[in-house]
Length: 286
Length: 286
Image 1 (cartoon, each protein chain N blue to C red):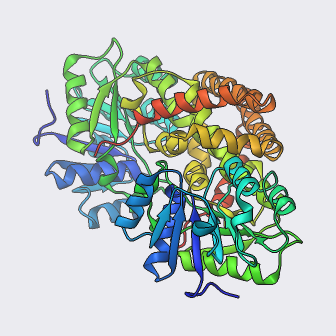
Image 2 (image 1 turned 180 degrees about the vertical axis):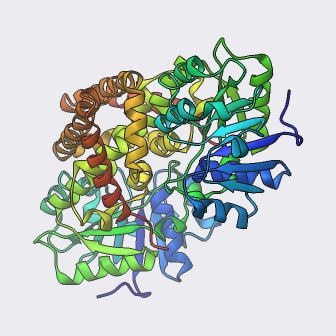
């Protein structure tokens, strides 16, 4: 089953991602409603044609009509929500999410969820350094990857629906990963890079630096402007995979340092050549 | 004395930077010639109105008319060139460079140089991941910093000339640093970031990574495509300052890792908040 316009879609949590989902889907003619914490976010979303209706209340009326529910909440808040409110979900509904960590979320939710509701997990790899519904922008999806993360509990039907959601949102690439592989990839590609950017900004305090900087430093630290509440939660919820990738990086960094200490130019050049070849694979498509 | 249009300007080395200097200055009506290794580079530069004349020969005729000579060579090649060819330089000429490391270059050249020629060192903090005169582009200077690195041997006259060169090239910001402070800044802002990008690319070999990447990883590794000949030389010629910055980063990274190991969310958040505040200073001017 693919996403279709007869479905009622509910977004839970109108932040940057929830808002961008709402806008992308409403722009395409889907019927989108929302529940979220603040009335201001509901008002903003209605005024900007992101949703047809919204509420700060969670009950049978605001939740019970949805065929597809998209949770755009912090991982712990998502788990709490399901614990408290899953009785309001319509029988046969499919739920999905935007959570950036999977191992500590997916099994827990699938285990606690009613058997007549299916949870298919997904991770839209898109974002901004700013948060909130007013910063929503469906264009952030256009050159980005959408990862569907099925488990053996998922049906082909729900996987197909989730993949079609990724395409309808405008993602460039929709793929599948296992929970474990997802968490490894995220630990390396996203979390480790945020650890590095934060550590680099914390390594040296010198107001003069900014007068002498080039683009290299700016690029490496762009993500050093970071939502500390969200990212500390994401790091800790993916602690083991992240520590493995931190150690892989430390080993590699230590090789380079040792080559420098021992004036071993050939090892430096060899690492640089490996880096150059591998990095070329990541050049953006057109 | 500021740069003026009666001066004969000679570029030594028509690579990416030498070519971009030549183009920027010729576009503004300066009289620019060049000596470089390959006839192809000379031909390209003449065809593209980057220089009025050029040669692969180094002699009194090709060098001796220049009032200002700009060396756009690798550091070791620059030092060799001065050793072999300084007798061709006109008495009273001023020479400058684009070298990215200073401690291992500036004193050596100032010590060996004839007393009737003055060397004022400078570092244009601009570049690209590609090399060669055909990739030259003066626009790389427009949002970048130009650092003049005087020593006590330099005259106010040469410093003024060098600063006016930076402005004429189109740099956004022209500043001065001591040799030692320059090397510390470069070690932190430029070399350490390249060490990190290379180490990150060498840490994990997985062809699948590219399907799942977001912009964070792309930004952190953009400079992982690296000219291994040039950068291994730059690293080794700035070895001590670079090792100090590597250790500062390792300490900071280790703090973050320890916080993760001990589930210390408050330390993680504190580092993130410091990072966020400091990184805001680096946001680009309009």
